[in-house]
Length: 87
Image 1 (cartoon, helix red, strand yellow):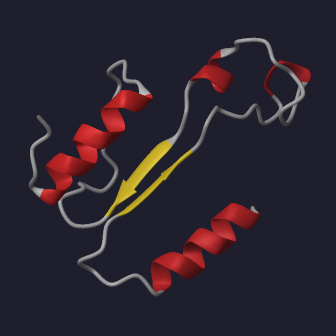
Image 2: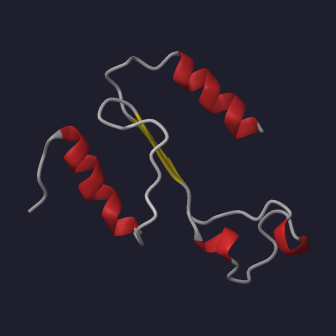
């Protein structure tokens, strides 16, 4: 809830031409499998699906990517968003 509040404040002041990327190092169980928070280290789906939110120009609202991705995909995604190519 705190993250939602802070993101709301940030987005209210974000210029339209600025893109924002928010991610995490791991997913977080929110009561699934009888656990909430980081204490359960088993590899349940809620833990291995890492959130990545992209907001801004060139980012369609509400789009969800179901393809398998990894953290190495973030740099090319940012480069494409900025109109640059990685070599």
